[in-house]
Image (cartoon, rainbow, N blue to C red):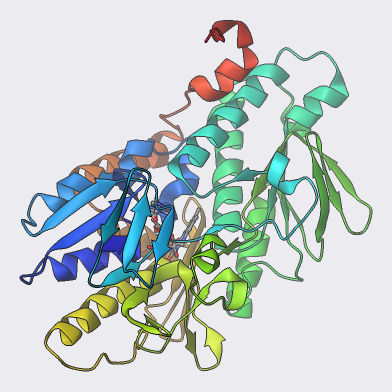
Length: 420
Ligand SMILES: Cc1cc2nc3c(=O)[nH]c(=O)nc-3n(C[C@H](O)[C@H](O)[C@H](O)COP(=O)(O)OP(=O)(O)OC[C@H]3O[C@@H](n4cnc5c(N)ncnc54)[C@H](O)[C@@H]3O)c2cc1C
């Protein structure tokens, strides 16, 4: 049984589908989400369907695999059962690949008022919210309120924060200024806030400097060494006392393991992730594997990052180890093969580190485009993403500037029927 149709779960499934075992995949959603491009949904660049792929399409070529769309409520490790809403499903071997949740680090007001960016719904809601802010601002006579609606704060200077800040700046300074010619562009602010003294910690200094100067040249205000102390519905408060008046705080500052895993008896490691043996097995339960963002695995005394290549390789490794156990052999330790890091900043601009070599600018951007396109699941998705990117590149346009019901419904409560 595999829990989670993310990167780790799906790649475990692919490996197990090649051998004569029965596999059941469980996920609360009936699709896999390609999270590395989620920020482009929020920035009105891609349609949500273009970065999602139906699980049942994956299963078509796998006669030994079944899918159950359900929320996992509990794992009974002793009885070897997974409980979902209306039943308990037994397993022989279990791969837990349930991913991570947004970490607000206990900052007051963040969970209530900040926008997370972790699911397809989050991406669509954020896009609608940003566009709604422009629709309101264009008819707002009060300067303070208008500027507040037009200020967008992003918390977290890691890859997602940097990529989203760049994409948002391009959306605003390109298509949105054409859509709203009466707005004064000087009133619009994109602020990227980072607690540490540099963006993209972990990457070589040259790449960090490039990302910083590139974002600043795109009109993004980058505030370093600025931990957030509070978020409200209309403001962001920083430790040095500065306050950004804004109705949009996007939280990309961190993720952690879901505390539910510990409640089920899986041992807690760093960052709420589950401690596993080097073979990815859970201590005490040789038939249970924990992989992907949820697993805390160390290499050279450092925890492996919560990124897709780690999840993919762990999913495959767990499946291989299960097959070894089925054959009566001993599981082997997981070894991570680092394939490098890439971050897109905007048009013709990215940073990439590959086998100790650092790239910036156009070459890194082309590398980023190719790798992301290649890794997307589904030919149709690749084609549509390519068309959208080409449209954006050649015409300086974003095709997906729709405000869809969730935000519009909030703005027009009279449109909702509240009768039971
Ligand atoms: C906005 C964003 C951008 C990112 N960009 C990059 C990038 O550029 N490059 C990179 O390498 N990595 C990136 N990552 C990280 C990468 O996406 C994750 O490391 C990777 O998705 C982890 O894979 P996973 O299989 O562990 O979890 P996920 O891919 O998150 O999958 C978990 C699955 O479990 C399901 N699930 C969770 N709880 C339950 C439950 N209780 N019941 C049923 N189903 C459940 C979810 O629906 C989901 O399908 C990004 C992440 C985000 C959020």
